[in-house]
Length: 412
Image (cartoon, rainbow, N blue to C red; front, side, top):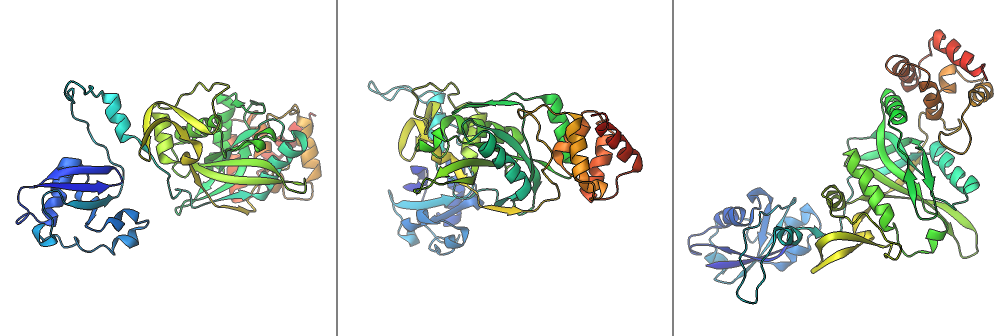
């Protein structure tokens, strides 16, 4: 007897021997063997509303096939009947070898088979429950792009902070790599030696890289996309590089109101799991032409979006919205930021220490951008961990380090 199974993957068929003796439990094992969906992931029903379920709790309403010992005939299932199937997790189907289907058929290639499996759907829930920005570091970033760059060219950075077990991301500082921004493009000139210092400081502070932040320019505000194809590609690259499922992509933009006043807005997203997978497996067309529609990402091969095979995917399919909050973190962000237009000198260190004289010394150096200046001249394996440990625990800085830092400032 042939049964038809309808799931999110469309309509498929399984063969069972005898409906009078085959039970629901045996049917699930047959589905596992023929369609490669593990038994424990399957929920079956004769009710088509099963395919509309949004949460695990709602699955418990579909009980008609919950008893594993019921026979298929007792459920009035006969040859050609439809059973509805939903399952958890991703499904990987090994494609069989196809032969030409008659004189008008065409031979299916392995690429065709893979494309049939690569479905692009919206991801409903982010892995990141919430992203919270330290107010000082967010202000330092947005003031620069607003007051100095006037949102005329793009600017970006890597966000550092912590990730809780519940998936809450806290951003406590932003590192801005050497870069060049234009109206549409943002190019990072990654410096491995500098990033080594950044990672050492972050580790000493009990933090890690948690996301990518960038601005959209005023000219982009007139375009009808959330993220452009270039931005999706860049965000997917950094997300894939991180290996962090809670990785956040944040966008800062200037929105002009009806009364011609303007507000700076922060938005946060996660790049969807399927987008990161497509990037890792090389599906994206990485050469973007001038006349390409910026709200569509081009693929090298067809993917399935809805019921359509296409090489162009609306960028919004790849974005999962993340809630935003703010907090006061352990660091200040008043020291001049690296890799901006001004040359960093020891005079900046002297000015900062003079300005913060009334504070305990550990508070005076509790600023990532200041620590990065110190890390360039201190020992990465001994001095940087010692100093950052003091900042992390807010304990007194050893006198030797205080004297060293003050003497560095006085060379200005």
